[in-house]
Each structure stands twice: as C-alpha cells, then as structure tokens.
Amino acid sequence: MQLKPYARTLAVALSLAFVAGCSSSGGTQDGSMDSSRTGNGVAGSGVSGSQVGGTGFGSGTAGQEADGRIPQQRTIYFEFDSDRIRGEFEPVLAAHARYLRENGNSRVVLQGHTDERGTREYNMALGERRARSVERFLSVQGVSPSQVEVVSYGEERPAARGQNEDAYAQNRRVVFAY
Figure 1 (cartoon, rainbow, N blue to C red):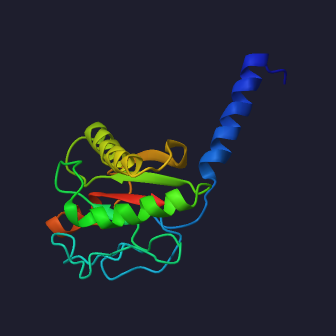
Figure 2 (figure 1 turned 180 degrees about the vertical axis):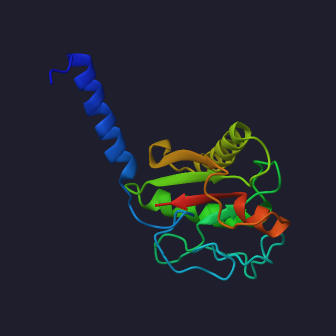
Figure 3 (figure 1 turned 90 degrees about the horizontal axis):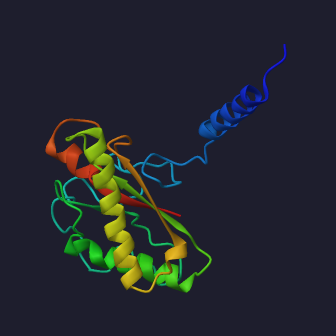
C-alpha cells in the first residue's frame, strides 16, 4: 500500500501525539508525587476539609521549610469565582518563593483548578487566572519567570467528588507541581 507523503506524515504525527498523550510521570491528580492521601482526599495539601474555609494555620509559618526543602504545603485554595489570593495562604506562597529563589535550577508548574460550576471554557479561563495570580505573586517576590509554568485544568481534575460546598472548596485551588 502506497501512502502519499502528507498522509504518511499525518500518520506519524498522530502516532507520536498518541504516545505522548499516553505517557505519565506518575503522581496524583493534585500534582503531588506522594500517593498517600489525607482524610479529605487532597494528597499532600496539609489542609483538612474544615480548614479550607478558615485559616487553620496555627503558627503562621505553614508550609515553610527551614532546611531548603520544597515546602510541604503545595496547594492553596480560592473563594468561589475568584482569583484573589487569600491572606492565609501568603506565608505558603512566600515559602515557595523563597525556595525557588534559593534554588535557581528548580522549576514549578502552577496547576489551576476550579469546581464544576460554570461552563468548561469559563472554568479553564478561571483556572488559568488563578495560576497567573500565583505566578504574579511569585514574580513580585523575586522568582525568575523562567522557573514558572502555568497550566489550567479547569474542572477536569477534581480533588474531591461531590456537589456540596466542601467538595467545591477543595476543588478551587492552585497546586505547585515540582
């Protein structure tokens, strides 16, 4: 069977796209590489379901590591239909900024997520706005733009299933994926 050159090129491109789409780096849906899960279904977030709505951070140094390790808390949460960074997560973001400044070769992907309310297109845009908001915060803190990548998953990768406020609150997030 003789394929025309453009058909052969198309077949090769589709095959490569399929293989690339099937590859996986492991990890969980929330971006952490830790397969252990907390009681609320959010892996490695350090935030319980009851803490999402309130501050829930006793010392104000949540997620900060003194020994140069990646901060433990890798997820921050947002209010409904908002890309504004909540005050209680600023120490977490500052810890990530400090880590990235001190480790110039490190890279992070900011994964923006939303709950299921709204259209798919709107949620993709909102997830991107949330991740860009975090990117701006990191930039102001002195993190090089070359260290940060932004991806929006919208509503496609929920951390919690359900149609209640607790599930929605856990899904409105940005995850730091190192």
